[in-house]
Length: 121
Image 1: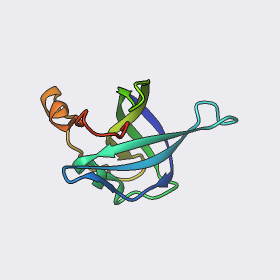
Image 2 (image 1 turned 135 degrees about the vertical axis):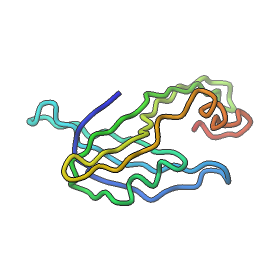
Image 3 (image 1 turned 45 degrees about the vertical axis):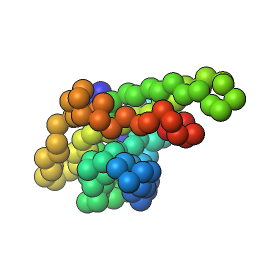
């Protein structure tokens, strides 16, 4: 999926586990400029570095995957979570940087979380 918008916020990279890191950012998406939407995306692993040379106010094109996850909490209640995982960000003005292609299915499987933890994400 692809969306165009303006970066509003970008956050520091978080280390979730020794083998997993993520970085979030917010995009202002204005399909209707009178009612802009503010959409939070996440980057994972080496893709976190794509935000380093971008700033709030930059117009960008974001390529992303819609991800969903089912989690059963310690009380046995089933919960569902969605995330928007960006895998490529191109600045609209000026030169664009080459980004790696989206991970293959096998690479996604390697990055899946253990179901043994108590975290829903």
